[in-house]
Length: 149
Image (tube, rainbow, N blue to C red; front, side, top):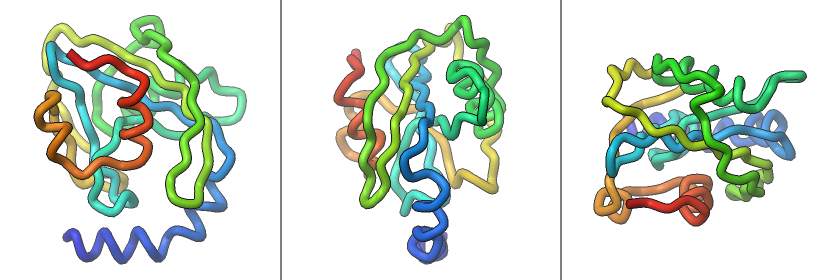
């Protein structure tokens, strides 16, 4: 599966560039106790990232963040539960984008059902796990601006 993901990843770069370069996107740090929820997008060369995605035209960024989390993980979060962290510029290989980063603290771990057309996996990670996994450039940039317990 990793070989197929890698091939798809590199073949899709021209399309990815056209669609997401210079766009505004969301990322959500979903916390439960001392862990955060990570996703492994199909088009991310096997590296872990945070849930989130594109903001539709006219869509409120917090609404977009909640929609993306719901679509990717089947987790329902309300915009008022999100805490704005920061808007940062992300540079991932040749693509530049603005990411509006939110955080939400969950009282219990939800049941997760990943969207297979976008993700190959999801996992909860603590600080130790984060130090040993392959992270996307985006995840690395976001972790630089959030505090982990």
